[in-house]
Image 1 (cartoon, helix red, strand yellow):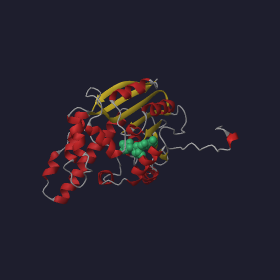
Image 2 (tube, rainbow, N blue to C red):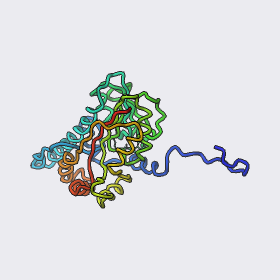
Image 3 (cartoon, protein in one colour):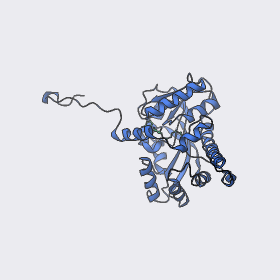
Image 4 (cartoon, helix red, strand yellow):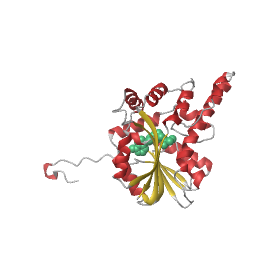
Length: 292
Ligand code: SAH
């Protein structure tokens, strides 16, 4: 930088993370919600996203309290896992030689799912140092740390090799960043013909601006949910051409209905999600795009 050296000032270092990003990192470094940890412990696949599909509500009828808790936990995990499998199913076809990029990887479950399904090499990136270390340890324990790696980095500036990736995704992590910057980085990392997949909550332009519930969700997670339109606008400007769009809102409701009754796992945001999904102000969306 060359800011007025003659005036005797020193150049301010450009921070690698904004203050907002530091706050997001603090949140995830401190996060220990049972809904994330207890579900993950079942099979060491740690997902920090929501579930989809029909829920087996018979778990609520279980008479033994300890067994009831266990069965509800397992059922929610099954639904979260189904969501991860849906995403991974849209990444292919991939071979063991292919590399994939998991942007905002949390405790790492998504990269493991993609690796187990496609045999591919994965790079997961999270702004939380603690999550990156946790995920790396999980991969080591599984003996797949040669193929699945986790990095404490900013997904907007990964420093990874241009054009080196066959597929990339964001699973519930786009609401922490500006989409233009994010998609520019995906477009840079993906090879021509590569696949990009996102699953996200977004507010519904057809409803209007963000509803009260959407604002409550933003405050709860310290994030900034984008409108649906913004995804397509930002993709079109960054060489990402949608090939499949799926509204998962109705599929997401059984998960939230079950979770709100899981006294040992609730975080307090459950009814807000249900209201937002039901009144049409909020949508759960899958978008698959080709990098052209
Ligand atoms: N995709 C994961 C985690 C979702 S939670 C899963 O499906 O389980 C949101 C994640 O986004 C957290 O891991 C958080 O650290 C990450 N994140 C938020 N902003 C980020 C940024 N600028 N760079 C990298 N990761 C970020």
